[in-house]
Image (tube, rainbow, N blue to C red):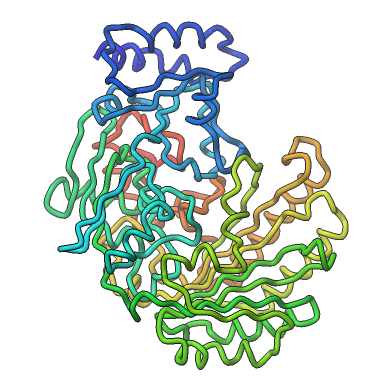
Length: 493
């Protein structure tokens, strides 16, 4: 309690620019190390320029990232409670620029909550706050189950959940948050609560779509699904050169509003350093028998792409093998990635071809930015849309796709770098163009993909904001959880 009271009193002082508070590391080290805090055995306190500090604060994207005076890696939930009120992280995959508002604060690293347990009798899986799908997908498959997930193996599964969790299985199973049964949540005032449909249901509603604003989830339990097609998925990888890009986008656009629930497509526009040209790599996955999958993707194979690889893999191997293994590059840490994103309710071939052409010109003009890429995810929404819009805080259940640019430059998006500045301008222009043909009346963005400069209704939905503001007022009136696309306590303000 001593630590909590002291941190609360000093919080406004510590969360200043490093230039305004140069002596705080010494004060924080002393405060954290006081014997009266009674840290549990195994709780780790770490400070800059130490290996443990690097392990506790390393991020997937370093663009506009938070900075810290120190980190606490709690060994148990009681020490999470003691560490309030600062920024808690699991797999540290979030990249909203609003996270950069936390400067010289205290990191609450949930790395010791990287656990999972599977109850094969009832088909549930319970994961810790830092666990990823990559940690437990093989064990879940071996137990005879599968579960919806995101597109990569490295984001924290709880982190996906609090933003809702879109992915390849939204057609069959819905969002990741639709599988959530219960969670253990540390609130801003230090309570440790069990949250579910029956216990604290208002908080349960809010954490499924806006949870980063309402508490720290130390563990969560999900309902898994019996294996579909014995857990076997047809996965087809294609590469299309520039002269076939329009044909490909025409085929992709023809699936707008017509994707079967078993189909999921990820399309990446990138610069191929071997071919020295802008190309498309696409993964078409079908969660069902290969014969049916081949029928569904026949319009793609009819284009006769120069590179095609079609195979059947267990669902637990899909992420690692898709696109020839692009997950490995996706999960590389410590890269400065600057994102612009938009939701799609309509698929527009002409828009994506224009995007391809702009990327080709960008690569030609700025060779130092050739790791920049476009990620276009087109997922069916049948199961996602079947859940009532009022059931959770997530507002975009009618979305069919999500598109984003990740700007990566040799300088790490350094200030004044012409390539980085051009990337910023390009990202903004592309986002506007995507929004104009998205099928939505204005820009909308999946909160886990938000840059952070979008208007609140564009992130959280105008119809959700009054209730979300009420929850923020009830559970976090002092805005302790202020750094991840913060909610207001009143709306309209």
